[in-house]
Length: 295
Image (tube, rainbow, N blue to C red; front, side, top):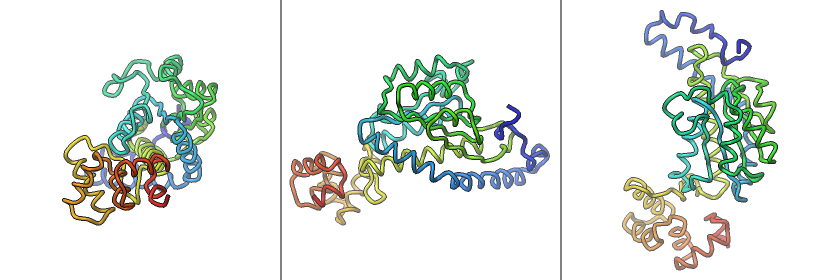
């Protein structure tokens, strides 16, 4: 592990325990600013990844994140957030973490070192060649992730590796490696810091832009948001209000008439058609509003 960037010591924090709180915060802040700068270097590779995830998702494929520890938790988090944000199902974006659900809150002994566990987890969700498996490992050497990517390759699935070491082991296994060199951590080896931030930012990009490509965004509005509480119902009505340029009360009535479906409400108004006609237009145009209103 000594040769890994993520395990090396940061020369800027050799006296971390002697710094004032303000000095420590300024140092951490300076280090954190390196993360987006390094992600910028891999945007061409991320573009390729998102072209694949968008195409596969629109054709029935799933986006599957695999990781252990912090990396695994970040994958589970991103997958879970897609459900309310984009009204996906729990089977569209899947987060797999070594050790299962229990590993979200406690360390599961030996889980990340298990190769058989990875294959079992992917087999359990019936992995197919339509799916995209994205392996997450700051070190790039986690056995659970390596085994998962290897198994996914064997089944013909698309594979991506996200790590914070250049020339990583998982990068050599995956079809597309995303390797972000954020440098040594402020606290040596604590990859929940810059490495975790880098992975979170990358996952934000993958899921968000994939969903834009899948037609779940109009302009920069979440038109497929799952209105599961009062706040989200209010947001949905305000989205209709914004797009259709009407009063809140009119938008609320339209939203109700559309069976609380933003896309249907918008197409009903912009095309001056019934709910059934709007639903048909959307279905015939892959549920993309801008295509439906031009049709």
